[in-house]
Image 1 (spheres, one colour):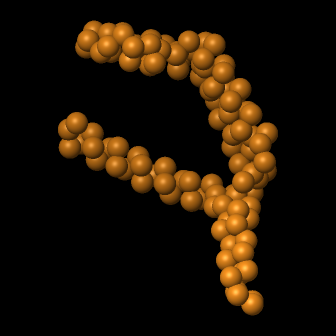
Image 2 (cartoon, helix red, strand yellow; image 1 turned 45 degrees about the vertical axis):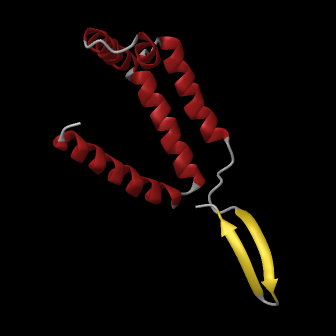
Length: 117
């Protein structure tokens, strides 16, 4: 991995971390709206996504990657539709942010709680 690739990955990781902190503070309705927007974007850009994946698979094969790895990389319309359905299913789940996971009274008036964030 080149230094520039490593820096790009590090920058991306930091951006994702910041986005996760922001997302955790959003309302459930806003999160579900964002998930639906993601699903719609995946549907709208499906032809471009599938074409780019085809190019990636061809490049991987030309570079001699193992067939097992290429098979995992390959995305077809059915897999993409499954991913889109999965995004929509996540929106249908209960929002776990702020749920009490553990609540114990350690001493009189001293309560320990663990909340999801």
